[in-house]
Image (cartoon, helix red, strand yellow):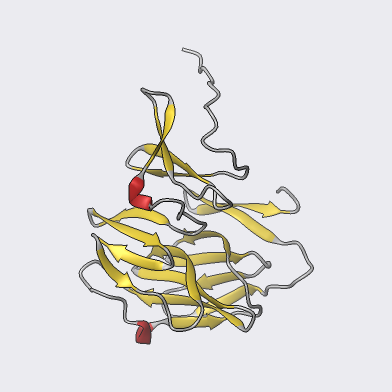
Length: 207
């Protein structure tokens, strides 16, 4: 049978909507003004608010994922596992743009305009709250750096920043593949694993 394409209704009035999936459903949110996470209901053909994400709270780098049969959630600059808080807001700046893989929770800490850091903290289900004394931290060149995309290749976690930095964590240390540089457009907007390779969408070339 031929595929039939159907235009879905707009979920909100914001432009720049971001998609993700959870429990076999397509979700959408905009981190500009609306900041509400909605999933698409095929029966009613409408976007339905998922209140677990909060009201007008969903922003870039936050959300939920399944881990060991339970939900790991990033919300309001904090982290929760199975409803229990495992990371609270810091004394300085704020945590943002979370990514979990290979037994490490990776996230940025920004104390603008002074500094930004990129942390990798070992953590697995059952560990309780994160032990920030075990964080492996990369001091970033610019305050205000955040993640444009994140991914995994082999045993490594890859982070691409809004200011062109490309950083790789191998489980023990960070290394800089490309140093961030203001005034030069170089962003990796997406990362997708394809067998043993990674496909990366690059701006501004479109390659």
